[in-house]
Length: 100
Image 1 (cartoon, rainbow, N blue to C red):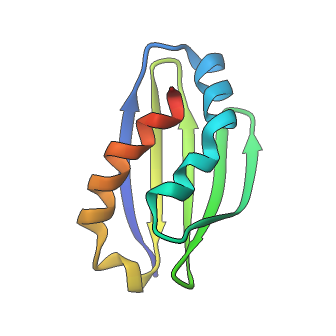
Image 2: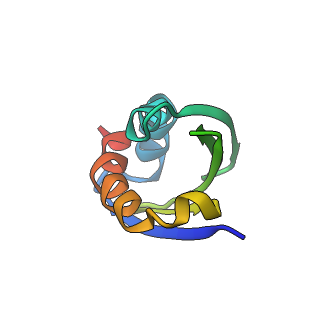
């Protein structure tokens, strides 16, 4: 079972611009985890599901883009769940870069 790490990233871009910036910068998240690579990603209207592979583990994520915020939920596998707090701190720093 995975350990979810949820966060909300506030923005003032509007839904369309936020989605455009995320689409153009999604690979920046690879830099957030040592050795991470984007394994797959799929858009469903204003929601993005993707998977990062790092250290032989898969981290899946769901982004829900809204007019003034992006709700993100990262699902950590058991091996990485013990680092959930550090992962949350790192993502709170790195995830807003998707909107730059």
